Length: 554
Image (cartoon, rainbow, N blue to C red; front, side):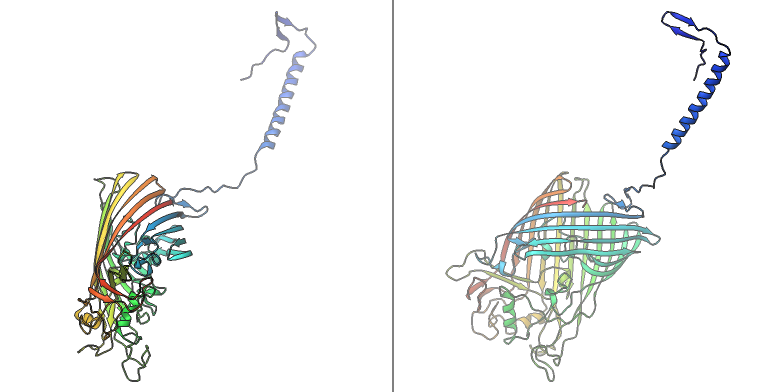
């Protein structure tokens, strides 16, 4: 709002002073005012035009993606959502390495020179999870890998990767959790209780697969996959060690002395079980029916596993002992496994509380019931004058065979080994930052009557476990029975001062109910243990694990 003021007058401190009138003063004053105003407007307009900014390029901001949960962001310029994660772990262990209790190999000797009482694991890993919506559903790529050092198993740094897969239109291809698995000890334990369970979940290395999952509605799905069965000439010690397959045991072997020397390799401090697998002929076939709802999850699963042996040691026209191709071979047999599992959420007790279990039966497919196949455990006590008082042993393969005619009426066929297992776990949150779990499980390994006769062809007397060859004089065991079992029970308490930080302690007790029983003689030294008389009986081990782990966007 402007107010026109007559320029012929002005206020003074004493009142109004009248200016003397001039000729044409009023018209000149108005003209000057108009011209000055126009000039001012032009000047202001010019200045404003000079100050106008140049049009900038649009800025791409990273936006939160809410389609798949916390931690996802849109990749700028795309409709792809990406989540980057990582974790770092330090773990110190007593009577364990990498979470696995010492019940095998040199550490299982429990001497001052063979068994390290304290070990550690340091691990760092990162993950990449990218997802894009398509007309066929979500296209996903996931990878997780890193570096670790575990004593005494990996004294140097090791690069690993345990997940790497693509999911699209219901298909999963790559290395991922097996279609057979649901319940896992991992949410309840730091330890290697995979001995009890055959699962490939969470922190295990996964399994190579090509699978399809159909959505049936209301949380129900059905899946089928072909998965790496682990049948390779290297057996469980080759690149397929993380697959399901164990080994076909040739009880005659290529070593002079037959089965007795084969058992020597089971007990030797440095040797591992040597299989006589044929090369891979077909992948495992796995199927499941599953439901995932607010109350939890449940699944029924089944699997088929091919047992394919190498050659007989000495059978057939022109056969040369030592796995010659001129030797004949047993027909392959199909093993199988079934499992029922469930995980139930218990928010009515406390938020985050769960309970779960899995029950598995297998025949000729042990890898689905248990993740271990060899046990050799000495008494924890030191030797007494060179005499070790106590020793436990157990070994297993998917199937066993010998040359035809090894026992009366035997035609050289594969005899499939049976195994059943049960595992369970429960977890309770005392506060949102403090939780305690209780877990445990049991595995039983059983052989057919024919398989027992192949392992103990002369009965309990002449057959000496673990290292006396058949027919050699010595102390015979009182019970030549290759069946055995083992179980574990434990509890873990974990504190989370921050959602990203885990601090906890896990205590686990493992028990081996030995194969065979009674007195035996070792004819070769076992690490620091000399050749000696031993008493074969049940053994146990107590493990303690402490962990500090930082999880970035887990």
